[in-house]
Image (cartoon, rainbow, N blue to C red; front, side, top):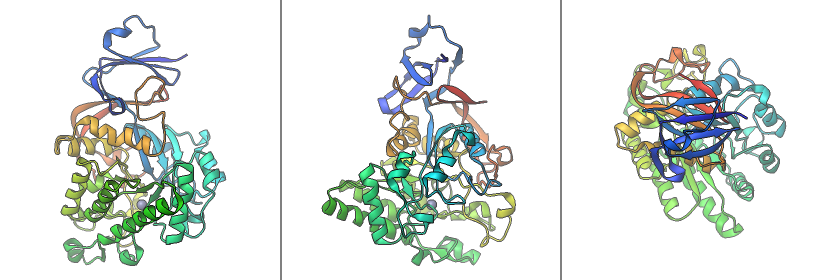
Length: 434
Ligand SMILES: [Zn+2]
């Protein structure tokens, strides 16, 4: 029997409306009790963690992570990516399927989720919605769901064909899981590599318009409406890494009409604009690309008004030599799992007045709900003992060379982070301390 007592912390648990001084008792991997500080004075425990002047919250959950294993382990492995995750305060991550081979089968998924991969966090997968993520034939949703899939996605590319996306939404709805869509109309983005606007004009790079995102979002929302009418099902569309005002407005309206649409945004889309590319900085190249200031403001507004359901990093590690090439040839993607909390606390909490409780809801409670992890994202007794303990006050410069991720492709090298993770506890075990 292993027990940990966390004392003197300020506990925030948005799932239960708690934002007050509380002590927590963890036993055998679960939350055993949560109570006012005096309640545990006589309890015998193996370890006591003093969380004075710290926030104690449910462990962060990232539903959009590229761990590169199998197949691209020079960029990241499940072990290194999840080790970086615990340093960032995360206790659960969801691996995207664009590995080599693509995770489109129970065999690949079982291999990824095997304890032999040595994950530091809880690990779940969103397998490919279509075989090889080729957009043509659906994978075996039912078998994959039984093998711990928490949704289906062809992330990296959109599920483009109407009939295939419709079938995916229907199949996922029968299992109560979301289809996560990378919303990009390739007939509009057409191989372009950054946002279309004054910056792409100045740099002489082909840009793709914001409409390319909204087009797919609107098409998918129309499919939801059709399926609800025709099939008497309630499909769940989750829109990944939304980056534009247009797409956010479409999602806001669909939600107001009662459709089951959720969405995530990535910290880089509320922290940066395409101006950050500067002199062809390839660590500012990702898909969807950094957008205009108007779009960044729209992302912030959508976070504040509840249109956005969760923050997800789209952590996408690449080796240095892969990014040290011409902008056009550099791969898309940046690391993000070690900077998500620090950026969210600085930009959302301090600069835009969001409560820390709301930040925790966006980073834990809400993503847990979205992928149906009913034992995560809450500090109620009986739930998983997955917690983050952080000091919300220190400011510090992020040093990508000191990052635990195998790759260092962050645009936030030297950027100011707010708040320091002091401990990350997964299933009642301290997996990170600083
Ligand atoms: Zn994507």
